[in-house]
Image (cartoon, rainbow, N blue to C red; front, top):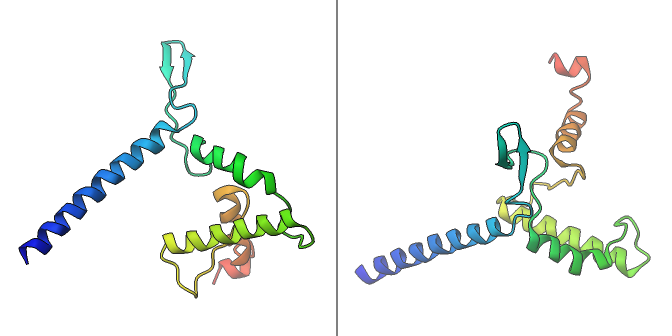
Length: 138
C-alpha cells in the first residue's frame, strides 16, 4: 500500500517537472519573445496579451509547418492529387487530436472555421440564426 502511494507521488512529481520543462521549452521558442519598442518613457519590452484570436508564433511549430506540412500543402477540396490527399490527412489528424484533447465524444463535432475566433463566433451566430429578429426574440 505504501509502495503504491510512493509510486503515485513520484509519478506526480515527474509529471509536474515535465510540465514545467514543457512550458519553459514552449516559452523559449516564442518568436519575438524579447522584442522591445521605443516609447516616450524609453525602451520597453513588448508584452503580448491578445491571445483571443492570434497567438505568438512558436519556432518549433513553424519549423514543423515549413518542413513537414507546407511542402504538401494543397486544397483539401481536391481529391485528384497526392498533395491534396496529404493535406486532408493532416486536417483530419488534427481534428482527431483536438477531439481527444478536449475530451469530445462521438456526438461532438470539431468545426474548423479558418479565421480564428471571430470566424467561429460568426459561424455560430449564423448556424443559430441569431441575426434573425424572430429567432432572437424567442
